[in-house]
Length: 46
Image 1: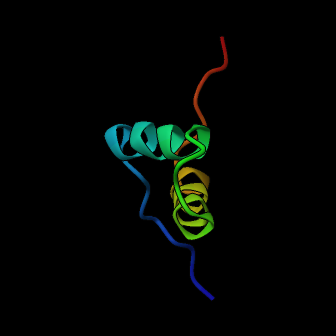
Image 2: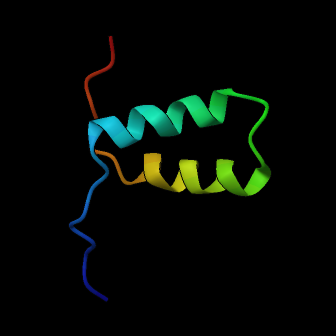
C-alpha cells in the first residue's frame, strides 16, 4: 500500500483542535477532527 502524501493545512488543523476542545460537538465531529489532526505535519513543540 502506498504512502498518503496529503496533509492537513494549518487552518484546518486549528479548527479541528477547537472542535476537539469544545464539548458541544458530536462524537462523530470529534472523530473527524482527530483524523484531520493525525494527518498534520509534526511541528516543533514549545
